[in-house]
Each structure stands twice: as structure tokens, then as C-alpha cells.
Amino acid sequence: MSDTYTVYLALGANLGRRRANIERALQSLPPQVAVTAVSRLYETEPAYVLEQPVFLNIAVEGKTRLDPRLLLTYLKSLEERIGREKAVRFGPRAIDIDIIFYEQQLIDEPGLQIPHPRMAERSFVLRPLADI
Image (tube, rainbow, N blue to C red; front, top):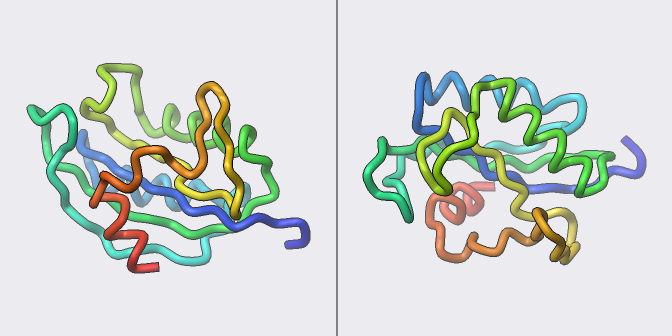
């Protein structure tokens, strides 16, 4: 792939068939995101809203031709296809896919912040990232 950009994504799920939801998200990333590395799977306690089921989390390294805004749009549509519904912020979800890094870019726009602004306080992001 020429003109590709390295991205790091965090995936999590705590509703329904958690592992299947993450596997479906991974399988659905290509061709828009070519997966180059995947962390181990971690089971983690919820953050912020504590009264909800535990999560499964992974981190993914990939290559994409999409610009950051188009990548975000693609990932949000993928979440919806897997069954994510709008609900309580930080609440339970069938799948969550966050852009953690996009190359070395710093982006601070409404609805899109890269690097992810809360990654440093989230061991469920940092531990899987450390794997890759």
C-alpha cells in the first residue's frame, strides 16, 4: 500500500458475545484498515460507569489510506453494524473502537481528538498497546 498511514486502535466490548463482537470488528477492518499487529485479549473492569459487565479489550496496529476523519466515520459505521447503540456515555456497549494514534498527528477537533485524550488513564488501552 502506498500513501498509507499507521494507526493504533483500541477495541472493547462488554455486551452480548464479547469475543465474537471483537473478532467480527477485527475481520471487518480490512480493506479500509490492514491489520498488522493485534495484542492479547484482556478482561478488564469498567471505568467511569462501574455498574456494568466487565470488558474484553484489545489493541490493533494497522495501515490505512483514510484520513483521520474518514477513518472515524468508517469505525463508527462498523460499530453500528456490529450492534452498538447510542446510550449512556462510558456505559455498556457491544463494541467500541477508538483511534488512539494516527501516525504522529495531533488533532483536536469537535468529535475527534488524536492522540486519544484519556488513554493515559486507561490501563485497558495501555496494557494491550504495550503488547504491540
